[in-house]
Structures are given as C-alpha cells and as structure tokens.
Image (spheres, rainbow, N blue to C red):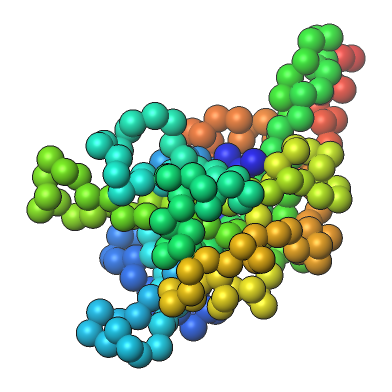
Length: 248
C-alpha cells in the first residue's frame, strides 16, 4: 500500500536528470513531505509530439491529481480516490485496463510512509509512522498509470489528468511493515514501461529485488499523521525516546 509519501524534486531538476520536457506550467510546485491522495503530484510519461506522431516519443514531466479518475466517471468525487491499483489485477479492472494498455507512467518520490500498531505509553495502542527510502538518499520511481477525464457537463473545460500507483505483495524487509508495497521500477525498465507504442508489459509488473534491497526503514515523528504538517522534520529519524520520557 502507498497512501502517503514524500516528494521534494522540482520539475526542472527531474527534466534535466531524465532528459525530459517540463510540461508542468508556471505554477510553483513546492517540496511536499506529506503527499496525500487528491494532491497534485509529478509524473513522468513518454509521448509523441502532437505534430509528429511518427517521430520518437519523448519523456515529459507532467502534473497530475493523485487518485485516478477513469474516463467513464460521471464526476471526480465519485467514491474513494483510486490512489493505488493492485498490479496483479489491473489488466482486468475497468478503471485501469485502458490505462495499462495506453497510459503508463512513473511516479517519482523520496520515499513513502507506513504505520505500525504498537503499544503506547498509556498502555493502549497507537499507530507509529515509519519512512521507507533508499539508504543512499536517491529517488525511487514507482510504476503508475494515468488517465484523462473530461467533465461531460462542461465539455469546453480543460481535461483532468490523474494517476495511480501500482502495488505488489511486499517482499523482504518490507513485509514487516505492510503486506503490500508500491511497485518500484529500476532504470533499466523505464523505457519499456513508458513506451506509448506498446500495449502493456505484464512481465515488468513484478518487484525488483535489487530495488527493494536498497530500501531502509526508519521510525519518524507522528507529526506526519496529520496532512496539515509538512516539512523536512517529518523525515528525521525518531527513536521514540520522547515516549520513554513520558513514563518517568
């Protein structure tokens, strides 16, 4: 599962690193240490130029709503946001099947959060947040799908682009945190996954053991529990010493 994550890269940096075109517009997108569903997030897609459909596809950085809105939806707020999609079943789910064939993307992030139910100082239990990220501080890129939705009530309105992150059964140390994990794609899989001229890649929708091995888990402040809190302090390791002090 991936329901909250951190993303501090700016579009210009991503465009330079990935040899991509920045199509995010002029609106500033600040570092977000507490990304939640329905937030505008950065994605990486590969598309042909509109005036050169036979030319090479180029990587493009785009801003999308996190929580996929299928093209057939009557309205945006119909049901819970589709911010995750099970990789094992996307090919057969109406909400995701078309996107798997024609609209695949990468979702860059610094790492993601999960919560564990643990004993609290008062003898009860509470959810304790942990942050999962590469030990070397590198970015990770998750396999995603995207869609274009047009409001049937206002056909002249700009279309809404939205995205979802694929998940898989957790493996290795990540299985201790949650039974599902976001599907990390290593660089050698990016081109095949993004290729707009291919119709899906089921062989790519499997966990990368090397990518998982790079992930380290650390406990962080419970300030991340509230989406109102957003800053680099959310990523600082917290060993829970404050909890012990409360018992003295």
